[in-house]
Length: 214
Image (cartoon, rainbow, N blue to C red; front, side):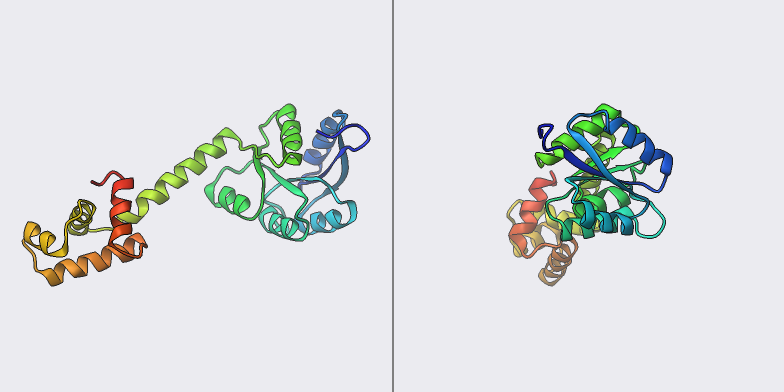
């Protein structure tokens, strides 16, 4: 946290004037924080970043004109020292993941308390992330889905072949165990590698073990 002689400069970006006013009112009660500007969309935010050099930007995602995801990407690219905290009502994965992937340090919901928002600002200048619990749950759920999505594309026969690959079986051994031709096994293995997006049998075997298929 900075001392009074060097306050944390915050820029507020939201398309609702009442939201901006509310944020300004409570942030200015924090001795260590100074609100240096407010913007109604992403384009205004980028211009104000150049003019006011904030330490932290509180960013809504859905706004008329340039939205928060695009603005976050531009701000973190042009001004790498500026930390962006998403402050929004949206908890959809299609908002969360792109925002974080495009440079947002933290992700808060507008249901957060004033204290939680202020703490996220203080954390941002230490380069520490704060992720709203509901958002973290969405992220973890997305990770689990992406981890299972790849092998869910396999046919029942391909899944059988993958399990045997995970057990270290050769193509000939797989052919004998499943009573199929060696050429058919090779076709299944090729399909498995493509669907799992892995380079070789070793990586396929590792995948099988990591996902409890063996």
